[in-house]
Length: 303
Image (tube, rainbow, N blue to C red; front, side, top):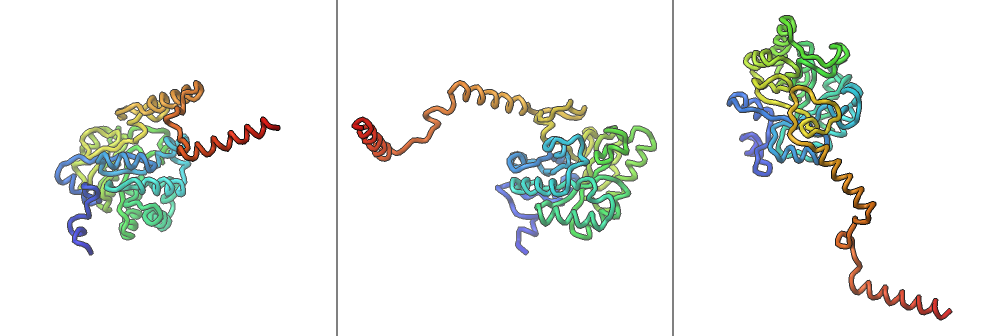
């Protein structure tokens, strides 16, 4: 074991490597935790270099990258493919992979096997799964397999059919009690953090105070220990109206559209590429070629 191992891991480009212990310590120090999704090499590298603590390869790629109507159709192989690409762009952030629908709901042993694939085949450092107290057994088995787990309760998109749509959860006393029960169960099972999605601010604040692990909010108000958003949402790269909790920090859609339209216009008008944007023969080769062409022209004239 290296000396750096005792100090929490090596530094990466001057920035310490983020681990699950880093995330847990930030809650203890009352420091906010940042998390964004990413789905490919270029965006994950930019997010990592911007200093984000955790990068989630979310099953939201089903909608924002692959064009599905929900997260349900995305496959394990698709998630592994994108996680591998993200891995190549990440140096410091903690890399978490979403377990897609159908890869863990049925059998705990299958769930562990699929989680192992994320670690071995794509370089994920943790996995995220949806559900509360009914996932306790699976969480414990994953931890026994040395795989850190991020929980996810509240509005769980993989349960969209059961919930009857994307609805805020915990709006009545029974719902609040169930959320608290789920949160405590996951916390006691050993998750290193949990996502609270689509729950009232007051409920998220109660859960955050009740559990030891950090809470990461998405549509859960500012009282959580951290926040996560979908990268495409904050960049304006989605084609549906944004949810109430989404704050857009840029308009990448307009930037891309304008650049593409300008390229089209330049090509059609003959303005691209210019001579400066073209490669040229070396002077010696050009002179030799000119001489050959002149000889050919003379022979053709003589005939």
